[in-house]
Image (cartoon, chains in turn yellow, purple):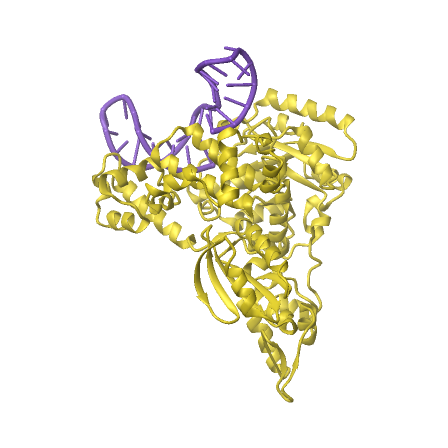
Length: 573
DNA sequence: GCCGTTTTCGGCCCGACTGTTTTCAGTCG
């Protein structure tokens, strides 16, 4: 939890410094530190106790002192000073696509605009276009950006909410008189974005426990409160609902509070037809008013004549019908994953060496790992030219002779250029074990052009996988304007694999599209797109998408053994 | 801000695209 607090504060500092127009590298230092700490596999508090903070890459004297201060006091003076002179709405404005630090400073300095609402109002009244550097189009783009933001503003990433929910759950489960704790709601169903955190606890003394809970340091504001439930705003700006139920009703309540609404409505209809009433207190037999208290969620489903349905499937998309017929999918699990096929090393914009990535992959129990650095046109990412790629291939071949227990596949993430051609010629691609193709430029081309680019890539005999096929960034960027029908069709005809990119802000393909791909017989690869060996563990986010998309191990190529995978990749060519 | 070192201070990330200009600034990946 402390890691998130520190990361949150450093990010907030970075945002304010950016708007102030501070030194770019200083800002980057804060952001980099925030990122590192958030993804640290260790508790920052433990490192602080052992005086090891400065051993973390990117943490020096100044930042480590601030970390000590945050651990001790929950904040630091520098941060508080900054905030004092800074309307909070300014940082919020950074979230608007098209609004950067400079424009925010401009509208604040010249028009005194310090919130998104004021900005919207000024844009509507055509006041922004009077400012230097802002014309009609920019004004309209800002309005559009505000709309985009509004559509997502009440949602946060699964990856942001989950660790916080887990931390609070673990604190709750440490309280005496709490007999059970579970995360519920959409977070338990592992939706890509959630509105809030829902937690349900079992206790015989709800009032006392809720009172204790409200004393936790993470709570900024109590929004609502009654005997069995509190609703609070956490100091990271995330809403949390905590429900307390009696121990005997816990499993019924957990099922009920996990939802989804669509799923539960269907279940309740089935219960009604069987003469039961299903709610958070238990299962009531209407005939004799006898209440059945399920001892597990499994018992809830069994009572209604069907096998257990995992939370990820509970979206009312046919899972109940499938369960009744006994044909629920054999869901893919973490243990099925034998490798990661999209990883960046420090040859391009990754931070880890190939060797350290391989070691980490081995430690995760993988059989193989593909190194797929960017191609030459993606300059900002340090894309590899042909000779550098060949050099990398040679090193990988050499490493494979020495390494034991893990196989490195030589690959590349090749840019699909704006004219539809690939960034490497076929005679280079054929040297690789695996080729990923993806779009990183020309996002605003028209639908036909963009679609054709991806379809063309599918038809290249050396392209194995299309990475992040729709290009969306959750909460920030809509998918490219592409005709996914044609993309699916091309993937199905050519046998091209589509990716579920497990990076928490992409999750692309999404669950619905993954299900459709499966139904069309298209193979999927679940890849992390890691730029740091530590984020190889993002695989779990991709797996949840896959599970929500009804995928089974056989649908996913990185469940294959190395022999089967290599055969599969070869046959594609 | 950090880092590496020449232990005191310079280097750290570049180019396309867009909209606004009329030569360039801001944003984004």
